[in-house]
Image (cartoon, rainbow, N blue to C red; front, side):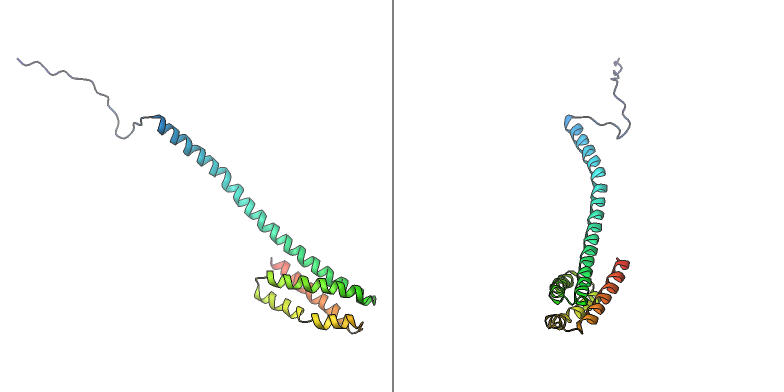
Length: 157
């Protein structure tokens, strides 16, 4: 007679559930967890830093505009005091700053308005050098136009 076959117990494993945790697999899982936690912390801080940089650039632009506005105002003020030498210095600073602003401006409409103001440079400089009284209303109008332009620009920023 034949002997019955011996049944060897085998591990019954549900399909696809077993993972053998070799040291390499443990290391890879740990590395992936560390990387994921790093990215979860880094991404929000990167976004907030980018937002802060954008706000900083906008603030610096507003400060440049305010400085130019102050220089235009001081030019007009000194001319009204008949101190044409000081008015000429403020005028030079204003127009030099205006040229830099034109170079930095990407808005074409704003650039055209600024270039129209820059076109007054030679006339105003000549009038100030000659201590011509007709420069006073020109400077007042220049200040008013620049003020209007900067206030409109700041409300749209």
